[in-house]
Image (tube, rainbow, N blue to C red; front, side, top):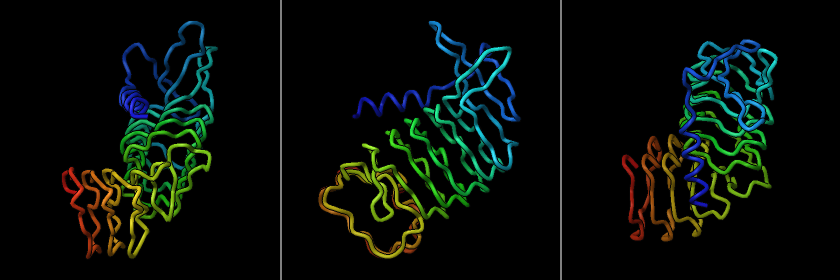
Length: 249
């Protein structure tokens, strides 16, 4: 599993453009094209569209000069700070790269299709009106992608997803050994299960309604800024078994 995650991290941070990759506009959205190899169809990634607004539909394929390109990625910072109100993602999509939708403050919901494998660092962070997220069954990496989404109240993960599960508004790894994130709308007291060994970076970021968190003795690692912005927190005990605490936790 660790090898798979490292591979995904490499892929998600590695998409780049060069002068050899043409950029086109298709139905008002810019795409960067990657030419086919070994007779395979070409691929396209949604490129940077900072002025995009309203309802955006990303198709499965785009066409130019008589050629077809399969849309399989959303480029880093593709819609950062834009005024889009909704996004329809294609069933051909595999990767959503870093900060692709960060600070899209008019976006209220997003459905991640089953084809998506990885969601990159800060992909949807600080989307202030984002209320609902649905995660498809193939997602195996969510890289601190939703922290700072203060309105987020619904996080649904496909029951057939083998990597993540959401229990009582907290997203865990499927075996519940690590905490990925807590919905910022969660309030009151929580007690993490004894299966938890790792509390990830930004896991409880901005959860200002929490008043008490019980951390089990099984926890060994607490990631950076894990409890940053938990302004209502009055009680937390760090077990003696914790060996690593990240910065600003």
